[in-house]
Amino acid sequence: DTAVSQTPKYLVTQMGNDKSIKCEQNLGHDTMYWYKQDSKKFLKIMFSYNNKELIINETVPNRFSPKSPDKAHLNLHINSLELGDSAVYFCASSRGARSYNEQFFGPGTRLTVL
Amino acid sequence: DQQVKQNSPSLSVQEGRISILNCDYTNSMFDYFLWYKKYPAEGPTFLISISSIKDKNEDGRFTVFLNKSAKHLSLHIVPSQPGDSAVYFCASTEGSNYKLTFGKGTLLTVNP
Image (tube, rainbow over all chains, first blue to last red; front, side, top):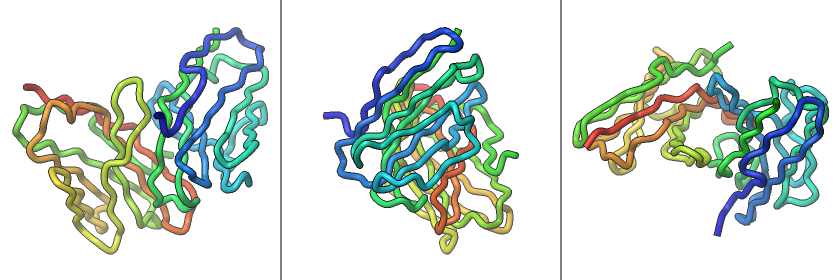
């Protein structure tokens, strides 16, 4: 009965390919996030959606495009993958968009670009 | 530009003793602070938080202390248990903001 789920858990692909990561939450939350944890271990916010509206869009290459078909889903599509995109990507959700609200994280997707 | 710094990448303590994890921040606008705990192959989970109007918040074995003048917070775990072994992330934010800024994490190992 997973609260925040992500698929796939592991993704290995070649440079230049396009890939997607899916995220679903069953908590009834109205806000969802994508974070990137790179080799330096920082967890950095990439995007946030509140009620399907984009509210955070950090300085992320426009090869990354989030899509929120409904409040329970937030997918991340990455075009023309580069070596530097290798990282663990975490999806999260919260009730309310304010940053002090507890965020619930998925298990992460480890992306390896060869 | 590391606004949240956890300068100890790792910490090892004996079961039953106190664990103290430290975090420093540089942004004076931060007014809310959170600790998240992460086990391998799992996402972070919320542990405890503190608002800048307080200097201490306690929840069972976990206590967070905030020293605003020093821009420093610490997480105390007493007594430490082997199940506490995990990576602990400090995070800070302005309450009116939408964005959390995380530190790099500290790996805590509690030895039986």
